[in-house]
Structures are given as C-alpha cells and as structure tokens.
Image (cartoon, rainbow, N blue to C red; front, top):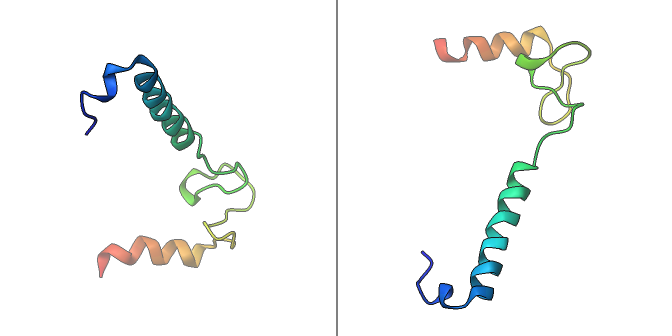
Length: 69
C-alpha cells in the first residue's frame, strides 16, 4: 500500500500515477495476434492452439469430454 509520504510531493505522486497508467496500458495492450484464433472463436481458416499446432475434431472431442470423466 502506498503511504501518505509519497503524496507530499506532487512530482512523486505524478511519477507514481504515471507508472500505474503505464502498467495498465502494457497489460491491456497484451492481445494475441490475429493469426492465432481460439477454437471457439474461429471464423474461418485454420484453427491453431497456443503452441501454433493445428486443432482438429479429435482434439475438440477430447476437450468436450474432459469434464464427463
């Protein structure tokens, strides 16, 4: 937690707030490439997993039945 001593200086508070905004921007900007589409969101073309390997019907069947066991 940030102590009250930090906010005694406007410059320190400004730098702290800038760091928070920079971190938020970096986290929100971390989007996957358009080429790697999740299997449920595919609109066409080849579907790949996180490693870049192609996903086929057998892989999807294994995932669908995973909760049934």
